[in-house]
Length: 320
Image 1 (cartoon, rainbow, N blue to C red):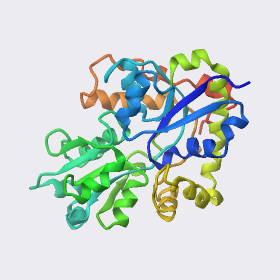
Image 2 (cartoon, one colour):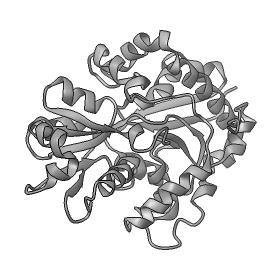
Image 3 (spheres, rainbow, N blue to C red):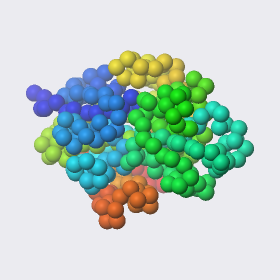
């Protein structure tokens, strides 16, 4: 007999693929766990629903999970991260008219003498922190030289088309959508800012982990296998066709297949170990850009629970 239904939230993004595939292929049920997916319009929706117990977990941004647990946005909500779902997969996309200046003078040349507004998917996101890191490395002050605003990922392309923003940092496939429409070009991929950076994780409410450890273990086992299937090159076209369906990304399968290619900056699904050490970079950057008060993220790494991953049959990475 199955236990309670675990409610997982996700956005319309390529790196939600392991959860979508596992649900579509009934892999959760095969492993004895009942999961209900909820496709949400924004990261704010996901964070709020986690906070109020309307979701038990989500495909999540690590900095947002850290912020929720530390009480930096909304109600303080204790979350745990028992699994990494993807690495890489984001890109900074700039409006097409900026291409010549960017190719000649870089991002600093784009910003010189013009008002530039760049969008990120949430103020507590890998996208925001990686964008800021990239800008600062080019001598651009993210808080003074540009305006950084927040938009849901699915609204990036329409906002670029309307001229409301000059560019954006978002996950696949939205950079590819803008490029395909002739609206923008990918100035830099996130893997070229921090190679193999953690991107999406599985974040669960701590009370779920305490209440249903068997269900959590079964879910982790399922997602480990689903991630491996998503990473298989010979499965990419079929995966793209699944993600293209109206209830998920609702975009052309050919475009999604391109966005899934890790060789061109798409998400990687094979690095699943939840390494809390990597959370320290996010914590340091959140402090650097005054996203968090001193001391609020001292225990950020403890959010990660590799013990749960290992107990579900996962493997620790081999030291190189």
